[in-house]
Image (cartoon, rainbow, N blue to C red; front, side, top):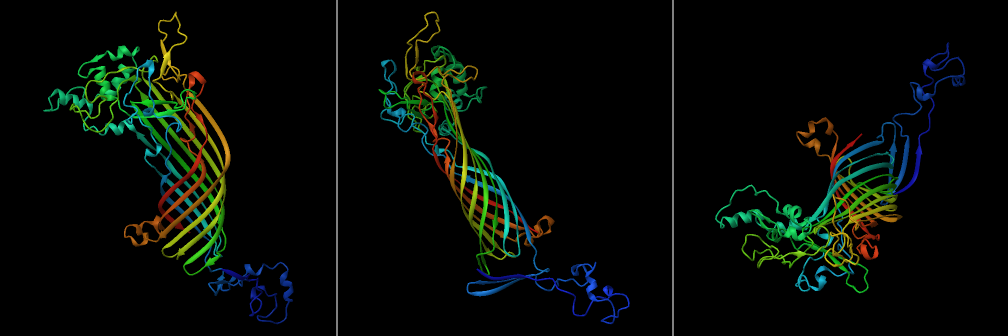
Length: 562
C-alpha cells in the first residue's frame, strides 16, 4: 500500500449566517447593524468549539488519507462520527505438546551390561550376557510425550488509522510423563503373583480367598530379605504361604535396564555398567510460561479481504524442565531369564527369573545391605528475553469470520541454570577384597566395591557415592514463533448462548501457536555418566549440551471487543 497524502481538518470560524445573537454586543441588531466591532469578541470569549456553533463540524472529516492498493486509489476519511479506537480482550484454554527428551541414559562410549563379562572372584556370572539382551540400555525417547493444560489471556487496541498495540500472557501448565519399566513388564502378567499362588494351591480349579490377596510381594522382598545383613540370613528366610526367600525373589525380580558408565580405568576400556532388577523409572517434567507485547504499524498491504502489517515487540519466556531417574537393584548374583511374555514352566507366572527350575541367588553387592537405591535429578531453568520482528496478517471481515496470524523471529538472551544431584550411580556388582581390613572390627567387610563406596542408605541419608553439580551460563538463542487464530461470531446464533449477557457481541476463538527456540540445555543429555568414586573421586557431573526446544500449542476461547 502506498500512502501519498494525509491531512487533518483545521478549526473553522463562525458560520456564514453571522455572529450568534447571544454574542452580539448590546444595542446591535440581528444580522448586522451598529455595535461593537467583532474584534472585541476575541477578548474573553470562549473558543468556538465550546460554543453552540462549534468550530469543527461533526459532518466534516478530521483525517483524510489517500493510498494505492493493487493499482487502485482509495481514500480513507475519518471524522468525529467515524469508528473509534477498538479495544479487545481474549481468554483462552491452552493445550500444549512439548518436545520429548532424547538420548541414551548412560555413557555412549561405555559398554552395556550385556557386552561386559563380569567375573568377581574369578567366577563368571550371567553366562548368557554376551549373546542376549540382558539389562539393555534405555533411551529417553520411550518416555511418553508431555501434554500440558494451561491458560492464555491477551488483549490490545486497534486505531482507526491502522496501527495498534497488543499484549499476551500464557501459562502452559505443569505436567510430567513417566516411563516405569517394571510396570510395563508386570502388565504382561494376566494375574498377580499372589493370585498365581492361590491358583496353584487350588490346582487351578478356583480362587482361594486369603488375607494375602492384596499383599505386595515386592515390599516383602525389599523389607525382609534384601535389607537384612548379612544377605545370607535374608536368603535363608522362609515365609508362610509365599515360600522361601528364593521363591519370592524368583517372582519379583525383572530383567529391566542397565546404565553404561565410564569408570576411567585404563585397563578396562569398556568401562562398567550398573544393573537394575527392581525398579527403573524415568520421569520428564516441564513448566513454561511466556509474556510479550508488540506494536503493529499501518498496513503495508491492504485489500478487501487481506491486510498485512509489520510488527515489532519483545517477549519473555521461562522454561523449567527436568529429568528424574529412580532405580533399585537387588545386588544379587543370579542367572537372569530373558523376558518373552511366555509362562514356560506353567506356574501361572509369566517371566520369572528362572522359567526352567529353581532360581539360585548369591551375594553380589558386598555392601552392608545388598539392596541399592539410586537416583538422578537434573533440573534446567531457562529465562529468555529479547526482541521480536515480523508480520501480522488478517484475512476476512471483522464483522464475520476473521483469521489472524503472525510470523515472528527473534534473538533472545538466554540465562540458564542447571543443577544436578544424585546417589549410587556406580557399578554395584564388581567387588575386590578389602585392601585395609580392620582386625579389631569383626563387622568390617572382607570385600568392597571395586569402583564405589558402600551403597547402604541409613535412615534415608545419602551415601558417600552421592554427587551434586551446578552451572550457570548466558548465551543467545534464536527464536521462531508462528500463530494462526480464527474468530467466529457464533454465540449470537446459538439459542441458549445468545441470551447470556456475557457473550453478547463476543466471538468464539480457535487457533494454534508453534514456538521454536534454539540452543536450550537438555537436562538428560547434559549429564556426563562417569563414575569411580572410591578409586578416582570421579562422579557423574554436568557437561552442558543444548538442542532445540519447541512447543505446539492449541487454544480455544472467547474474544470480546469494545
